[in-house]
Image (cartoon, rainbow, N blue to C red; front, side):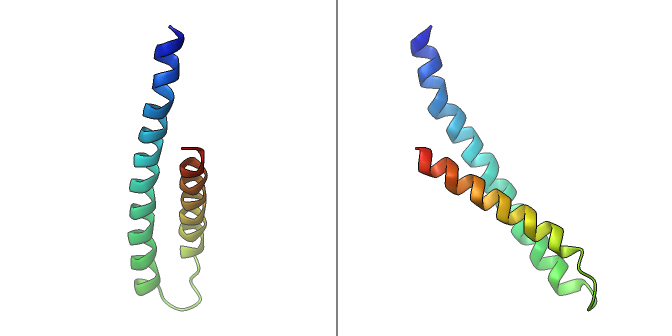
Length: 66
């Protein structure tokens, strides 16, 4: 049982890494579109940028654990 638990940790890290990478790419595309299409003084893209930075930090931390 301990062996299965131990081996599932790298699989979980891989799943998290893949999920975060997909989320990061989605947010990058969304942010680029928002920045290009929003009028001046409209800063709702800032929330997307915050989410992107958070996803990148989480991915970096996850990678550091590997």
